[in-house]
Structure formats: structure tokens, C-alpha cells
Length: 452
Length: 89
Image (tube, rainbow over all chains, first blue to last red; front, side, top):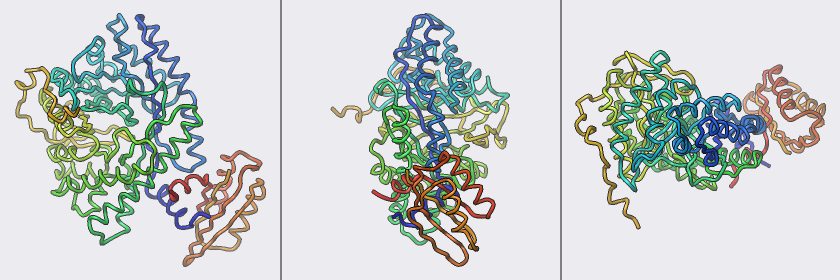
């Protein structure tokens, strides 16, 4: 029979330490929905997603009740819409976003990702129109998320796209200024975007993926923190070992849920994303894990080292717990979604420069950072270029999700509510990179690209 | 399907009786029981077979949770797979 201690440990994790499955994301290919008539294409998109995902929410809810573990989000990711839009002779491709919104409401998912374009080596037909339409699309929808991949280790960074995205992020904020600039919180700019990422806002269904697939993202920073708190006096090797063991247990939950969901939805199981995803709830913070390791506050000297350890141990523990690993896999550091990071940003311990260093050793990038409303587009593009360069050179995914707080400055805060949380406006170095950004062109791929 | 029923709370007379009679009422067979009392905290774990349960699994979980609330106990009914997958390789 099962060990009593083990059973109580699992219940303790779920009841008191916020263990949950962050998301079950169904990836759906829309390649067969392209049509030269945009209205026909939208109808096909609607029909295909609803047909594939109509049971997603009820099946997940049933699994939640059977296993007694919460599944916080049920989401859908689709083929980058720019590819579908490329076939259309229409300039108003926001219709696709409105269709996705309609789908989200019909099937009851929390988010739908894939209003995306992949432009790391240049723009193809459809890409320009999509990027141009992002601000309007995100302002006129609630559940649709957008992402643009501007660089990769293999091909370098498309600096024209970087320049465009700086403007696009600003525009997203401006159009939703009356709603705490929520538009920009649903847009992420990637370098080395993974094709099977279950997490928003960056989820899309890559072209190499099957027609339909189930990807799962786990969570559980609270569990790791609690395990560390219970084991005082460990040296740093012991800390890494403990994180590994805990990550293994957390990931096993993800694997189980992913398999059950895939089986019941008659869809292949894709990947488990080995992630530590925080929420603004007390006791669910990645920053607090770093603090439990011995930092006075997240952002102190030593933060990058602690995060490197955490990120590595999560992967080492998780990789054996799952049969297929993918997505972003690692620790997340979204500022506004993490109670510990919010506190550290409020009192100035955590600054954007430190966060940038942290992104070199963890799984994502500058995520959910509120910046002053008067930050010029070129500066935002400069931040994107820096972050993409870190990703490109280190062969890892990096992303930028900045929210210019229109009409606000240092000391003010934005409040998005829900999982997106709230964040203080953080200081940005405004020395101008305008001339560099204005040059455009392709930043060449590094030597690491030449592996063949 | 086998489910694990866990009961945690302050020790008092009749916990086992109440929980097991609720199981009997819904035709849930209790296969194994372990319990321990640490200081005055009571922890009981029942391995049960719910395949012939007279109501749906959801409803049984709810009934158990209500029984827990009435008696100031925390009662969970969970599929055994969650424990197997987390703690066994």
C-alpha cells in the first residue's frame, strides 16, 4: 500500500503550497484552413477549433475532480495566423483575431495563442499585415494572445522586425490605456521561440507539430520553497538535490494529467513543460525560492547564481519524470505575476538590468515588466535587441513582454488582475539607441549556428 | 477505479464509523485502512474501490467533503494514480 507520509505530502502540496497544473494547452494546426476569401477562412478556423477543442474544458475539469489537483488554465494554441492570412486577399486581418475570440468564448478556454508571425529571417506575405494589426487585434479582443519571433541562433536577428515591434508594443499600450494597458501584456517578442510552448502569451502551434496535440505546463514554486524551508542547514549541493527531487514530483503530476487528457480527448500527447511558473498569490513565488536559498531579497547580488541553480535543478529533476519534455522548461521570472518580484521591484532591489542578467540563465526573458509611459519606441526596440542577442548567442529562448504604462511614471503601478497580477513602473535607461535601431537589416547569426 | 480517502483533523469518537458508513451508503468498498494519531491530530487513509459506487465519483467526493465540513475534518477523495505517479518510479 502507499506510504502514509507520501499521501499526506501530496495533499499538503495541493492544499497549502499551491501545487497545481498551470495549463493544459491544446495545439491545433490551422494549415488546412487557409482560403483566399478571409470570411471563408475565418469560418473554417472557427469550425476546426471548435470541433477539436469542444471537449477540452469539460475533460480537464473531470480530471481535476478525479485527481483532486487544480488545473488553473485551459488554453488553445494555433498555427501562426500570419501563415493563414498570407493566403487572403484582405487587408483587414483583425477578423482572424475576432474569430479566435469567438472560439475562446464558445469553448470556454482562458486564452488562445497564435496571433503570431515568425519573421526571424525576413517578412513573407502576411507577416507585415499581421504585425501591423496586432495592436488593434489585442485591443478588440480579451482572450487572444500574440507573439512575434524576431530572431534565432540559426539565422540571427531581424532588426527591421525589432524596430517594428518597439512601435507595436507602444501602440498596444496606447490603445488599451483605459484598461491598464492590458494589450501589451498579451504580446510577446521572442528569439528562438519554441513551437510547442503551452504558456501564454507566447504559445503557438508550430508547423512541425501534429494536427492536434496536448501540451501541459506545470507549476509549483510554493512546493519548492516549502521543501527548502523545511530543510535548514543544507549546503548548496544539498539545495540543488532537494530542488531536483521536488521538481521530479511536480513534473510527475504534469505527466499524469497530460497522459489522461490526451487519452480522453483522443489527441496525441505532446510535451510537458518543466516549469516553475509563479502566480501573484502568496506562497507561489519564484523570488521567494531564491530568498529561501539565502538572499535578503530577490535582485541582491547572488540572484543570478541562485536562479541558475534553480533553473538547472528543475530541468534535471523534471526530465526523468516525463517522457517528452519541451516548451520553455525552466524557472519563469514574470515580474508582475510574482509576489516576491513585485516587492523587490517596488523597493528598488530588482532593476531591469539585473533582470536582463537573470534571463541569461533561466527559461524566459524580460517578462511582464511595467515601464514608464513615455519610453520611446526605439528604447523598447533596444531592449528587445539586447534580449534577443542573449537568446541568440546562448542558443536559448528569450522573450520580451514589456508594458509601457501610458500616462504613468516611476512610483505608479498597473493592475491587470488575475494571473497577470500587478506591477510598479520600473526605471528604464533612456539614453537613445535610435540610430542603431534605425539602421535595420539582419544581425548575423553567431558561430554557434554553424554546427553541421 | 481505486480511490484514496484521506481524513485529517482533531481526534474524536466515531470518525472511522462516520466515514466508513458513508462509504457503505454509496456502495464503496473499503479495501485497506491505516490510521495514526499524532498528539491529538488524527490522520486516516482508506484505500477504497469505487467502481460499484451507487452515485457518480464527483457526487461521492462532494458527499465526503460535506461530511468533513460537518465534523470539522478535512476529507479528500482522490484517484490513487496521483499518489502512485508522484511517489513511485
